[in-house]
Length: 479
Ligand SMILES: Cc1cc2nc3c(=O)[nH]c(=O)nc-3n(C[C@H](O)[C@H](O)[C@H](O)COP(=O)(O)OP(=O)(O)OC[C@H]3O[C@@H](n4cnc5c(N)ncnc54)[C@H](O)[C@@H]3O)c2cc1C
Image 1 (tube, helix red, strand yellow):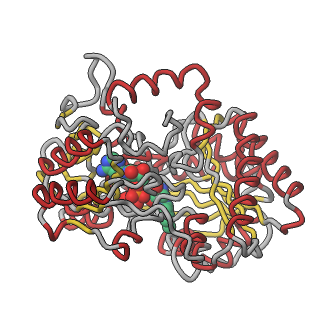
Image 2 (tube, protein in one colour):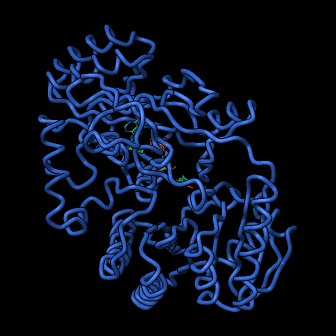
């Protein structure tokens, strides 16, 4: 942008949000030029940051966001909404400069409805603050992702996030009653107050998972739950992954409702469960299964699940190791364990598919990556954490401990590994991403994944955002 324009837009932004809510120094803006995508981190390490936004604004209310977006339309300036910046696929990086709207000052609880059990809340709230507020009143959102400490509600809504209890309570999209959104042309809209209607499609779903391309989600009404009377967690070890997956499938198709069902492959049992969670297990596939709610109901479901597990020769490691898993469940995601802090080349290629494809997809991806990248001593492990009656998500991760130092070679190797993994996912009827979104990194695969149906998304985008200003680098839309 020419300096004259920068100056003009700056003055207009100051009129909207005030000088204190505008960052223009490179130092301040650099924090907004990366997210948790390992390639962007490498770029920072090497001093190669180029994707600085022109402005970062911290609006204090919805009207200010509306005015900022109307201004961006006048000058055709890209707008990127920023929550915690914990997205792992480059979705929050301002590749074309423009205005970053940091939403974190919109963090208020608007109302709590204790009769219908729902809460209206602004989306800039950190997820942990929302959960603490609810817990202090005897409630929970039951959306407990590992990034609860570093992500906002808006981030989860925009990427269709999953928490650790999703097998019973659903993903974030299952918790939404209604949304308030600032559209790409600046109008403020509310979706219908409840989702289970037949008055046309549920338009809240246009915005959930849109990664900021169809507007800024500014508040949401979400259902909430009472804190459970009991929470049980039991740990088991199966002889191999196949048996663990089969037993878990049987639990789900029989309609049992485990709050947690997490199956670790043999590699993750060794590397995550033993080394990072400190649970003393050796060979085999570790599974933790949890039930919660009223004691009588949770106990009955638990007993049924135990019967199924025993049929598959699971060895009971006891409640103590199950509880230890629950207490330490976030540890692998934060220092000193987090891969990010070690500057490895790593990626989490999460996917979701039906029961009949899960094992095949996992084995094919493991074989493909271990063979193709054997020169790099690639480590491939996985766990299976979000279960449905019809299928489950696979959470594979790869690690290259000694990646190229040169950032361009690092990027190329990263792309080659992801491309090989994506091919396996698409060939096996998997969907790219169960809860991490698409971001910048997976954008090129969107058309291939959706086939003709991508037209629907494209028309939606063109209709709602005629100037293509809202987060233009993500979800594979035309630039
Ligand atoms: C350690 C760690 C653990 C993680 N564990 C989980 C997990 O268990 N489950 C899970 O689902 N994810 C997990 N993630 C991924 C991450 O938390 C999610 O992608 C989350 O959505 C990011 O939220 P954020 O507030 O950080 O969003 P950001 O990274 O700031 O933004 C993500 C995307 O959403 C858009 N966006 C943000 N807010 C809004 C809004 N209000 N309106 C419109 N668009 C918006 C942004 O433009 C961007 O495209 C993890 C990440 C890390 C680093």
